[in-house]
Length: 311
Image (cartoon, rainbow, N blue to C red):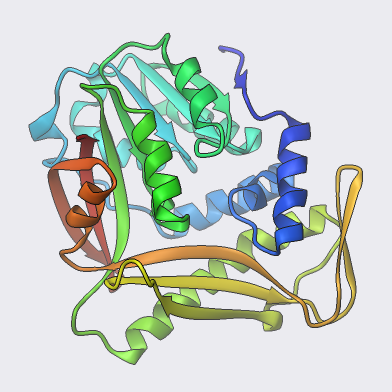
């Protein structure tokens, strides 16, 4: 087994988590806290809402450019990888897994070692914050490369920041598979209610393990959500999940403590949904062209998958 490449150390992870807690808004750091219990919770959630196994059988298969290296940014349990490249699985010689959580990487690596013949390398990094260092570490792997960033991960962050960082990883002949949550032009109130309930449940299911590791217990009844438009992108809806602390609570991360007063709220999840048919224009605005795309619906949830390249 190849030793992991560590870009984000434990000390860096803890510092970033503390900074986010103090800003009252956490993102990827939430999933790096809590070790194996948090990773196992994420795997269980991933298993409950898997991608269809044929999600890109035609989409990527028809545009396969001889890539022998796949870089999976946020691999989850590893199942998404097989869903994405099943049509040319035997051609891949190198797999690079990138995640903030060493324990999550271990789960994905174990799964892919049992289901592929490729050499697997793990990189512990926040692929957005550490994009420059990650780009340097990836130089030694075969090119061209296919990047995967699935699970609607790109939509969880400010778009100029996220798409700019992802674009910076691509060389001229590289491709990246991105997916985004969508909403239809005609949608009911029940559509949004169901959607926010899924996100609230996901945030609680994983977040409760992370906060236990920080010395606090979460109660689901203090979870609440919001849906708001975006001033710069009128076709975008931003879903957020918050936790309101019912009493003074001290969260301990490494050697630091962050205190939340009674009634203070902490954002623990953010996700963007795009109006159906408007993602390609959005990607182009951020320097990403779309070679081909595919749309699907599962459990009444709409998703678009886009094979992108630099423009």
